[in-house]
Length: 329
Image (cartoon, rainbow, N blue to C red; front, side, top):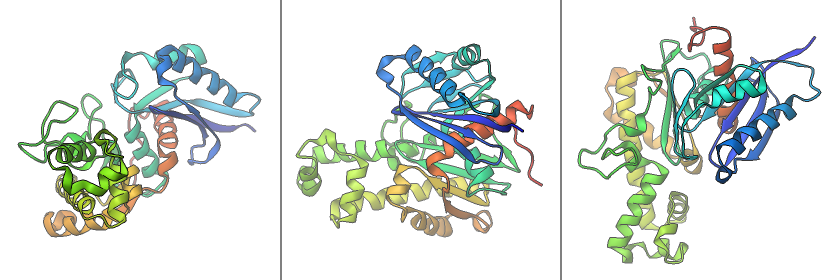
């Protein structure tokens, strides 16, 4: 008897992960290739087709279809609206891949795909009300309310990185000012620190030494590393970042009343202590009833969550669940 599986694809700016995923979230096979974004849309599409075909070659597996997670905006029909990392706009990737591979294709935002993975198979398994937050270069989320993953009217529900935290704050990449990302994301902290170092370089002596006096080379990763090494300047930046993360999390707890908040992404992986700092701020500042049952948990299948979750998302659509997973009873 043939095994049944769905192909999960995590399409990122630097790499593409492919996996054969069962309905239980088991990874039967996995492959990672470079994206090679400079070679253009057609090259990447053909590379996906080639690698999917290779993944299926001589396999005794029944494939239900393909799920793809992408870093950007996707409409409810699976049409790519904008992928900033690849500079793709209005690309009919779903249509083109279906024509080439003769398999149904479902496309969703990569963080929402990761939320599917964590909800069905990871730290959020069994929860009715869950928020997944990935803090990396930006801040993204996937949100489950009353046992349903929420999409919103235009499939952009959960853009929490762009909620306003600081009224007269810095300009964000989205065009707004004072977004959560400007205060608590990888790009936001790096940009803020570069501005401060340009104004007052003498306080950032060790940081400038680390980047050989090239301010453009300052990254949040380097800041966190120096903070761990005891540099007071970088420790202050990291403390402010933790506070900003906590303030945003208070808003999330008060708004969505989750039982679980799953935290992942490169920033959390680099400084898992942020989780306890977030907990403390939520305990002191969130509405007591809203915060009374919430757990903060580090993502459990973080590395493969986008790939596994994209497959799970697709399987639900192919089973005619109309963008919604089974309600958990």
